[in-house]
Every structure is written in structure tokens, then in C-alpha cells.
Amino acid sequence: MEQERTEIASLGEFGLIDHLTKNNETVQAGTILSVGDDSAVIDHFGKQTVISTDMLLEGVHFDLMYTPLRHLGYKAVAVNLSDIYAMCAEPTHITVSIGISNRFSVEALDEFYEGVYAACRRYNVDLIGGDTSSSLKGFVISVTAIGEVAPDKFVTRSGAKVNDLLCVSGNLGAAYMGLQILEREKRIFLESPGVQPDLGNKAYIVGRILKPEPRADIVNWLKEHEISPTAMIDVSDGLSSEILHICTQSGVGCILYEEKIPIHSETRDMALEFNIDPTTCALSGGEDYELLFTVKQEDYEKIARNEQISIIGYITEKEENTNLLTKQGNKHILKAQGWNAFSEQKK
Ligand code: ADP
Ligand code: MG
Image 1 (spheres, rainbow, N blue to C red):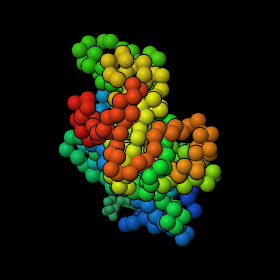
Image 2 (cartoon, helix red, strand yellow):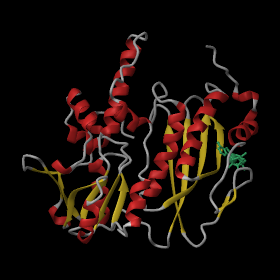
Image 3 (cartoon, rainbow, N blue to C red):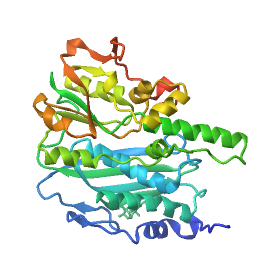
Image 4 (cartoon, helix red, strand yellow):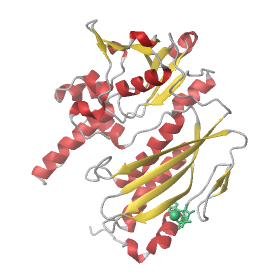
């Protein structure tokens, strides 16, 4: 079937912005002025404002060969909201800026924005502006997320104290294994274009890389149960790198138990098929967008009741260093390997 293709040039920059935002609806009481003026205006009614911004570059952060544009739009928003939740704050607004070449049609951008708006609806945030520019070749996306938090209730990376429990939500390493599957199917496709991708029963891990969800549920649950984490960060580069951020910025050390690291069975199976140690996936794979945080010992009972949270270790004095205690009982110093561990391009 021939797909319709409307050239961006036929709308022009302002026509395109109007086209992409004409159905934009806002739901936040604090949205005083949205798209259409020189600036947007928001009110956080006495709360503090948190802001985070991220850039996504085609060929560096995403590959359009296996990333549907709708998923990309959703993910671009989701990963930014994850940074807001990682402050224990509530996201309220986003701006979306894009750099596009004439390779893209208006229909392609519509798909991208379907994903953007879907994430906005899912997380109750308003799109209040952005910027649109031409790029020579690749697709450039920059999202800024804005959120609110009760005065001084935001949680930084630097508040972890000796004896605090080290906790993580969900499971780790799945997105990295999902990426390995997509990369493998891409190579097979490039070699023999007739072959259909075999994603078989890999839906979970492929979903984790293509459509991550920020852990709003965890932040809300902590609030409902009156648990104030002492430090928090979202897991975008792999567990060891994030643990090191918390430990360095808090001036502490830690013990991480390998056997406590939560890994999904699909991740484990796939890792073994690829001859990768599942623990390495969790430690050094990225893009899980889970929350890593520390809580006081006295919150143990409450935390232990939430099946979505694993207690994976505890905080020690800085002098004791950052340690991984393996299943065999050996102690290793944790290193941040990021994607380098797999000789991938470092983000
Ligand atoms: P200015 O020249 O003042 O920067 P623009 O023409 O770039 O204004 O933008 C006009 C309005 O459209 C502004 O409210 C801006 O935030 C919004 N806007 C521009 N591009 C986008 C986009 N890609 N998505 C959402 N809103 C956008
Ligand atoms: Mg502008």
C-alpha cells in the first residue's frame, strides 16, 4: 500500500508547529500560558520547581531502523520524566524541540508526536512549547521536563548515610538484552532483507528498550507510606555507574549483594544465549529507568513488603569502598563500566 507523504516544506515552519500542536490539550491547573507565545507561563502554587533536560541524537541514542517513531516519541518523554521522578518530584510540563531534515514527512512527525502525546496523557503532563529547526541529516530531539515538589522535599544523590539500605525498583539488564536482540535482527536483515525478524517470545525485553516507563508508581508508593529516601537516582547507565554516583556524591561506600540484584527470567535466558553474564547486564547495561535509592534502616519493614522493590545492599563508611559481594562470596570493587563493558559506543 502506498503511504501518504506530505512534505514538511508544504507546511513551512509555522504551519508545521501549528499542525503538530493544534490538538494539544492541557490538564495541569498550573498551566497559565501554553504553546503559541514567546514563552510559556506556569505556576507551581508555592511548590518548588525541578527541571531536567536531555538530548537524543539519531545514530547515537536511537536507530530508526528498529525504533518505531511512535515509540521514540513516547520514550523521549518517558526518559525525561524519569529524571523528575528520580528527584522524588512530580512532573507537570514538558517542552519538545526537534531538528528534522526533509527525509521526514509530516506523517512521520505525526507518528512521533502521537507517542509524545501518549506519554503526556499517561503521566498527566502538559506539552507547553518547544522549538523546531531543520537539521542537515539526522533527527535531533531535545526534551525538557519540569516538575514540582513540596518545599525542600526533593531527593538528591548526595544524602546516603552509613547503614542505609540500598534499594532498586523492578529488574535490571532487560533493556540491554532487548537492544542486543534488535541489533542482532538488524544485522540479519541487512545480510538477507527477505528474512522476517524473529522476536519470538522476547516481547518483555524488547518492550523494555523500546517503551520504557518511568517509575511514577514507586515515587507515589514511597510518599503514601511516608518513606523519605535519603538519596535517589534513576538507572540510565547501569547499576554500578549509578551506585558510584550515589556513593561518590554522598561520601560513602557500600556492599552490593550479587544474589539480590533483580533480573527478569527473560533477561537471564537471553544473556545466557548471548554468552553474557546476567549480572554484568544488570551492572553495566543501561536504559532500565528503574529507581535506585537509599532508605534508613527503620524503613526496612515497610520496604520489604513491596514486591516491586529489592533491597540489594547497604551503605558503609567511605573507607570500606564500593563492593560487590559475589554469589561465591568474593569481594570485588565496583567499577562504572557503562556501555564500554560491551565495547558499545558510550553515550
Ligand atoms: P520563537 O521564535 O519565539 O522561538 P517559535 O516560532 O519557535 O517561537 O515557536 C512558536 C510557539 O510554538 C512557541 O510557543 C513554541 O514553544 C512552540 N513550539 C515550537 N516548536 C514546537 C514543537 N516542536 N513542539 C511544541 N511546541 C513548539
Ligand atoms: Mg523558537
